[in-house]
Length: 113
Length: 499
Image: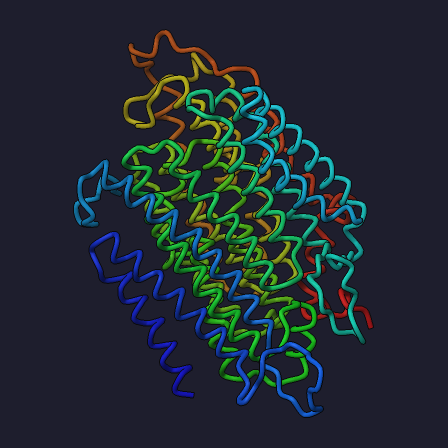
């Protein structure tokens, strides 16, 4: 149980970073923390106490407990998607730095209204 | 091989081929983009004939084992057909418009690649019958739209896109978190199967958490009121055709469609007053705030973006009433708004193309030089502000009548008031941009090229005449199957899995 609560805590820490931090890079890191928290949570859901990897081999007993393989497959997909979004965000941060010469969101304010 | 897979395969395949074809001949992107979207439009019209049935296709032929689905299911029912029609028809005319408009920008190849990727994602979201698959398509759409918003790579566009990415990324993570708990509760990701599992059990607190996460996540994607901050920056910053797609289609598919599908068909909350009240409150807030914020705008596209928030509020409001009439009104308004708002964004692009200016205060008298743009934008404005006999009037009328029938007199009054405010800011837009004295520096401008005119005129005809969809014989073909899917609620699982 404590693991689930800790991963939710990690989620909240990441969300705090996204909402409060003023630096573009720190916002991106916050978003990554949120993503890792969700992935961790997803993997935990598939975990079974004393479970083995879900691969059937010779000489296995009848009463084997497998961990749920589906969340692992989903997390793998989610990680790839996360890679895409993070790469895009970082490249945007670089382009914004070229235009504004700062990472500070308080100074990046050409849009108003 | 089933026809419905083509909705994803064709644009996805074309998107991956385009960067290569672009190297061979620079004319390929225009042709491929337009042919693919014309094909998809034809296919979606062809699907109308099966609107009354439910087609299920299991990808890779992983048929259900003992009634339990194990593969990814693609589902086409009445609601899906309606959404496919909106997406692909708007996309085709936007694509046609892009041929001339995007010659302003460099590298059309990348533009069409991203556009087709977005189209594949949108079609995927509506035909997917699997929650995680829906999430993946949602992310495909989102990532390509992030890139398209910043297509001009100016400072403002990068800033807007960054804001959009941070909020969109947060929304995606909230949705994924919801999916994780959802999977834990039901043990399945297939929407129909999950609905069957949930219907046997009482509602538990974890399900409330899932609902809250989904409302926040999809609400952010739909730009409903407390979650709207990214939209007025992101939509105006994109090139005009992309603004048309974002405002006309993307917020509806990623936000409203996903929300309605999950809550009405899977959770079966379509009859629970608490949930409906949340939709009503979010809808009313967006309606009021969007319209009043739009009043003060000086930028053509920014005004339209705020108007989108207000109109998406109308749609959520209609669904929140929960009655059949309310749902008809909401779906019909969704169709009308998709057409008229895309039209208006294309008009703003035409004005920008001719005058290189988006500030309303510096325009004036453009109707003398650009008659097609002026007339079509007048029709679009009338449709969105809801004046008879233009189509927008009928959908708003249905929503307001539905509100009165539910004895929500105050909210019905608010809806009427918002319609009047909407009329006010659209009249302001028309007055400032197209009528009055022509600015001297614009003496030499000309009407935009033919392809742009054609798409604007066709969309204007649609937004003028879509009221005919309410005529019973036409309503039975297009609107009624979609309404039936929503009002049937959790019957969805029986339709998909049989039994």
